Amino acid sequence: MSGLLLTGIGHLTTHDGDPITDAVVAIDETTITYAGKESDSPAQENRERVDCGGRAVIPGFVDAHTHLVFAGDRSDEFARRLAGESYTKIAAAGGGILSTVEATRSATEETLFDLAAKRVWTMIRGGTTTVEIKSGYGLDLETELRLLRVARRIGDELPVTVRTTFLGAHSVPAEYRSDRDGYVDLVVNEMLPAAADHADFCDVFVEDGVFGVDEARTIFEAGGALGLPARVHAEQLSHLGGAALAAEIGASSADHLDHVTPDDAAALATAGVTCVLVPGAAYTLGTPQPSGRMLWDAGCTVALATDCNPGTSYIETMGLVISLGVVQMGLTADEAIWAATRGGALSLGLENRGQIKEGSPADLVVLDAPSPAHIPYRPASNLVQTVIKDGSVIVGLGPADTARTEPPSPARLHE
Figure 1 (tube, rainbow, N blue to C red):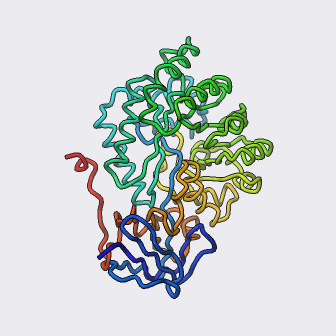
Figure 2 (figure 1 turned 135 degrees about the vertical axis):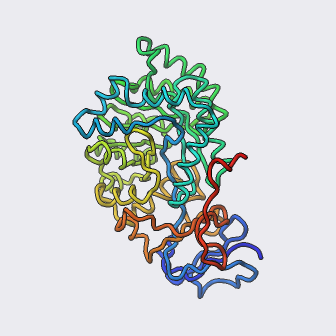
Figure 3 (figure 1 turned 180 degrees about the vertical axis):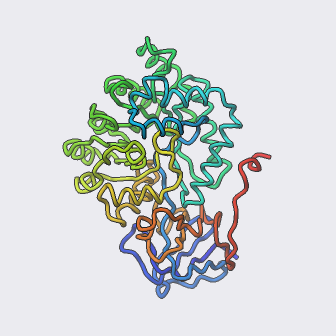
């Protein structure tokens, strides 16, 4: 046998034209060789068949904004926010990001890997086949490098494509509170050069009380000189100018955008900056969502992501994110699915992923539903039946059988 043949597809979302009914997808080792009507398919001999039974097939999810590598627990902060404390007040008292930094600095590399691998397996079971992972919970050279090494190892040892982002400018650590300029110098002159071989992007949290636009520009210029495109945490808690900066420097993405304006949207669209929206954060914080509808209608490339992190969006799978994108951000179901697959891939510079097209890597999800619209319609259900990563069935139905498979436990991954 050579490759797989998915048959009996009731609804095939390719992102290369309209959805296709009565479809098949042929896979040769790791690559899609045909996706279309079964009646138009060339002969597909010597392939192992997976009968989808009229179910929907979509590209694997591309989660383009996560903070997966961390230690510690901030559930107490969630309870405090529900009692009325603001995120800003909790952070000023030593909570927030700095609380996670303290726990993460004290964790070993093996512990961080095991914790992150468990989260990633949950993501994979939920249909994620590509994920971006940021550092940012070390805020010193040693720990930031440890986080990036763990992130790269996730991509090496688990069936998921990983892109890594250096986020040393996530916050100013406690030991530099009286020397902000010194910390920016540390990021630019020591952290970035050391991190460049372990990262694909550079990110800065541009926010009032965190890093200003001029500080961010300095860091992004240094990252760009090392070959690291910019990703910008922009306009989350206030409107400080991060979106305009992202447009100015031609960033790969501007993320969050809760306080984005129509003028920002026009600039981002013109500059070709992907708008990565993370509705889980506003949902958890109880704040208004950014207008996905406004950004989409302005011509922006829109992506949806989990922002999986220990404080403001501990969400590991894309189903709820897609539902929030539809119900609270104004996207249609088709737009939200596109944003959670193709949009995320484009933000990461992965032009051939997030789609089902001849010549593209075979990253696909079979849903236990007749249409992708069931994802936002049934947000509390994991509708992912089968996950195919680079041509191999890693979760769910195997070729010619109906047995579910369980991925190995993280502890066994490096025995």
